[in-house]
Length: 449
Ligand SMILES: Cc1ncc(COP(=O)(O)O)c(C=O)c1O
Image (cartoon, rainbow, N blue to C red; front, side, top):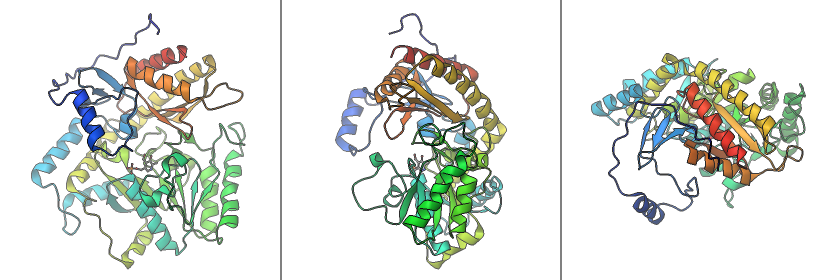
């Protein structure tokens, strides 16, 4: 324990309401009794979260934490953001459910606003409720439009947990031992930290992309339906692709009859600080874009945006989603888009992300177990190793930092196939003082290993 240093959370005006619900112990026991045991909880002693306001959450005792994981990269503009809450409450008091069988202004106003954020001819929106559903629909669209079946995804990717997209996801830890990946092939992950071509190789992007061609020629008929890639791999540990990777991979996929699908579930909505969409940082325009998480700031909202031509392929049969386009979700989504612009959150993500990475890079030089730090904007990772030369994954060190950060008042995330990567993705409303607090917390935690 580091007795001398006790980092202080920056002052914040919000006073949490006294918590009067069931006790921690009762809640834990009830959860164990009634919820499916596959739902894992973070921390040796699970944390109970009962209130949130902007970048902070409170536990049942009234203790405040910096939410530096944003409810798994989902709280984009801040917990209980007043504008987002007002939009939801106003709409819930008017009408909370209509479905798409009737006209309603919320879905059309929002679809128009969202389409305006998209480049090229990506103007046709289908709203759903989760990222998994969005990717499932994108798989279907790609197959219907191209008439081909095979799909290429990347090793180390995560695209969701429903049966169809479990096949796309490529971590054994997230794949159940049931048939699910027929027609799906995984290309090399373009990882410049662990992969064969590193960050100082200017040709790395094209070299990794060549594997997509190799895979198509060897594992498929030579014709594919599409190619899925997260613009930055999230669950896999914030893997940022080398320049030129997606451009070349897209070229190859299109040459083989496929469409290109960008999964923006984590990297979208300005989080990378460099562009509104992660794919823009690679200079490409996909044919289909899936989005979730940040889109609703915590509301169950997701979308698939594509071209009118690709969307047309869906009209061969009836397709319907009961809650997709729900007017309350639509009002929330519209408010989120407005807040990101009004509060300049993309720029904030850039400035604060750079500040954070600069601090982490100094820590990397100081600590042998911190093998790599990387990211873009407020999507950042720290990869733990036993030593820098061997790069052997160090899950224990990662776990220690993770637990200690919570004790010191910062909630962070974990990821990577070997559980040795810390992920940090706070709401984009964090302040400089929060970032400095977080750096101090991490430095203390690392110094104790
Ligand atoms: C990149 C990516 N795609 C898809 C999903 C699935 O989203 P959901 O959990 O909303 O189904 C996730 C979830 O973590 C994700 O990170």
